[in-house]
Image 1: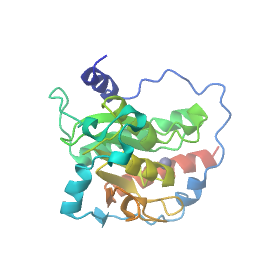
Image 2: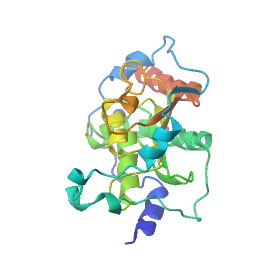
Image 3: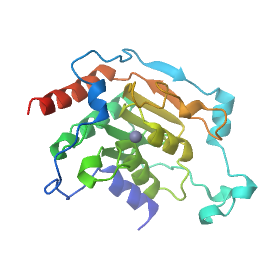
Image 4: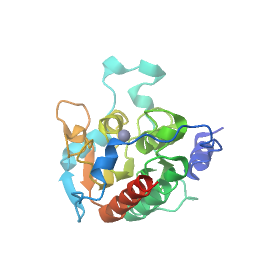
Length: 242
Ligand code: ZN
């Protein structure tokens, strides 16, 4: 199967047949404390938490592996793939991508998962992947929406560097997912609701702009933050009412 075909298949969204049957009821989640009845500090406006300088950004996008890393995983710096284009898929804005991410998130409660959704856009703004949180469904502590979407997007690339891509998430990425954004060389992350208990893109720390790391990810927060927070609050309110 060619890369373009793979991208097309993946871009249509999650096709999962596994049901939640047999899974134990979801356990209380640390996020519940963040999105309970009390007000949650969420940025109302789109606010740039950190932005890499344009020159650094260009260098980051054109980043190639140092010669010492060439050959690791069978991929050399010269072989790092670019996202390419696919005219069959429409270009979407980041706000439209966030609406897709919110729609993905809305699928998670059906299997007892906290509603978090994520979309990966290529450099032109075409959807490469869209996933939602499947931690309870999969019984997998790493099955966060952002990580699953990155894996799907990477499956349509040659190599692991998702150069020029953007990740749009309904919740501020945690340390694991923020680390994955850096590792994947993602150019920019846009998130809706801040997570004061686990957020690693500006709340507790900012792994996306740590000068000790070899890649920076531009961070934009608060895009449709009210909608995402309301979705999370409704989920936890419903669960408490059972
Ligand atoms: Zn995460």
